[in-house]
Image (cartoon, rainbow, N blue to C red; front, side):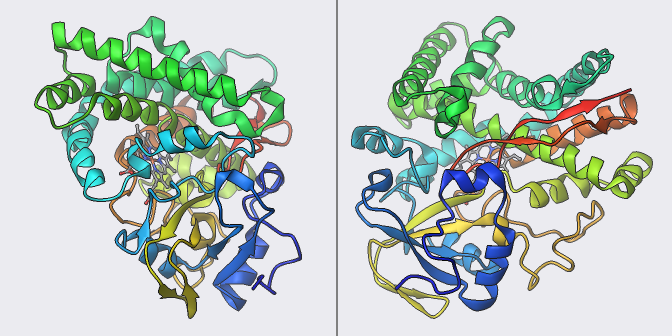
Length: 411
Ligand code: HEM
């Protein structure tokens, strides 16, 4: 039964929607009137047999679904809420080799191995180098005498360098990885003219590159995550497919998300000058989490019910898909005072921008928070007078709240 609280034909996963805006008014209406609501989709979309999904909009329900993988699977239909209309079934099947699209016990096994590369010690070890990178990125952006694009000149660079440092990718190969990961993510946006084939080729190239790195580390071990994963592969604990797909996932998960958090964060600061002044003078450590709540770069992931169950008073049938709308959860007034206020001192801030706290909770969170802190500290030091000179141009996507261009100027 379609949701009466939404206009006819409204679909949160229609890429034209995020292309223009985050549907906060519709989320607010659903949280109030029908927090778990059935949204029909046109037939044959996204390779899924079911024509619709339950929109889950309240913080408590998004958390509940995320923390009950036995009831709500990430692998049955994968975690991506809507693929490109023309994607091949095989490509969706291959997605299940990615951590994000696994269920326990495979997920538990792979996650235990790959998280060794993300210990607090491993992330701390990157801090000084990333701080120097952040300062260099800002110094080169500051050299522009006229307007420049904040996304390409500032926001893109640090996430790319962070993943490359973590994986031990040499400097000369970093642009290649960046280019491939962009091509895999931008397929919904016609401006990039990325066809499904180009996206698939890029995925293949990253996996081949990862396999070469693995072969190299077998010969010459280094202090990086690839060396650790290769050791696990040798012990028979990680398949070589799983290794390749994990590197692929890092390239996508770590780049696009953090870049958008930084861009939305800058936009939020420049449109809330009181918060920018406060940040510049006090540098509150709470700012990074508020930026992620405010930005919610991953708009939604999905789960599929493994059995008949109930949620928010609705009967969910085995096989039904559920959309977890993190942006809605992050504006839930049941949890956040003044949820529509950007407040960099907000504390506590139990936002779900990194996921709902279940087994898939973002593996790169500490790295992302570190990057956000480093870049805004560098901007506040060296470009405190940055100003907006145009509107953001948004990415067309079914599930990424992205910005392609943000015109700014230091003068
Ligand atoms: C998972 C958001 C940065 C690696 C996730 C999930 C979200 C998310 C929403 C899914 C959680 C769930 O399903 O419960 C973000 C945001 C970021 C960010 C908003 C930046 C602001 C990063 C970075 C990396 C990373 C920098 C790595 C370098 C991963 C991985 C997973 C993941 C590997 C899958 C974990 C699993 O399935 O067990 N992230 N992420 N993320 N993220 Fe992030």
